[in-house]
Each structure stands twice: as structure tokens, then as C-alpha cells.
Image (cartoon, rainbow, N blue to C red; front, side, top):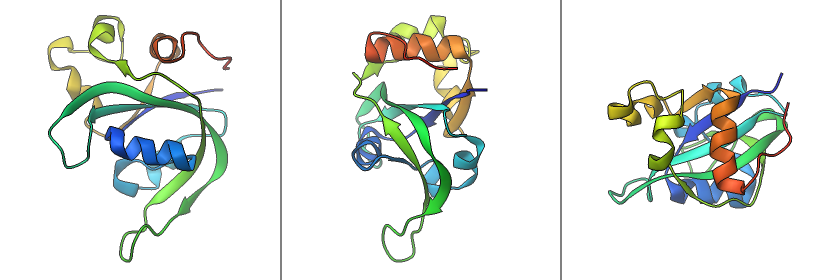
Length: 144
């Protein structure tokens, strides 16, 4: 059964993953990547433009399908070896979250909506996935 996920990362970091065809979540932890399966969908939400920056983004910035069945370590620089998983990203338009807040069921408290993203990786219902990707792609891709 297909599952639908959101990963949280700065737009700057998401862009690196999209260019490289991989996902890296929760500061490089393997467990969030292991929760996903080939055929699952991943949407990235970017609270900020840059990891260390203060400029807000508050948009969904990428969407892709899990294609790699392995979670693998990748040495970015000595002493930092995060885990990655291969993703087939689609060309998508950055989509602001604020116009969608009232319709997203995974956001329970609309006045504290950012709280939903605190763990950096979460599963969402199919209806929320379809709402978000329709904004990003202009249509909902075929999915299970």
C-alpha cells in the first residue's frame, strides 16, 4: 500500500537533494528513510530558505517518488556521514502552505500549524497529499 510522507528541510537543502536525486532527513538519520518504501511519495516542506538563515520560505518545495530500496550512508565531509535514499523528483512549483492550512487534516491546531512539522518527517493522509500535489503539479499523479 502506498504511503505519503512529508520531509522538512530548508529550500537550500531540498534543492541539493532534488539535483542529486536523493532524500536526506532529520539531520541524516537512517530511521525516517527506512520507514518509507519503494513507491511511496515524499513531499518536502521548507520552513526557511537556508538552513542557518532566518528568511522564511513556508512552502512545499519538492515532490518525488521513492525509487531506491536501500538506505545508504554518504560521506559529505570527514566526520559527517548522513544516510540517504534515492528519490525520483518531479518538476514542481513551490506552493505556499498558508492558503492550504484550513484544508490540511494533519494540521490539528490551525493556530499553531508549524507544530506539525517538529519531528522533521511525518506521514500524511492521501487526501492531504492530493491537495498539496495538485498545487505543486497542477494535477494529482497516479498513485496507489
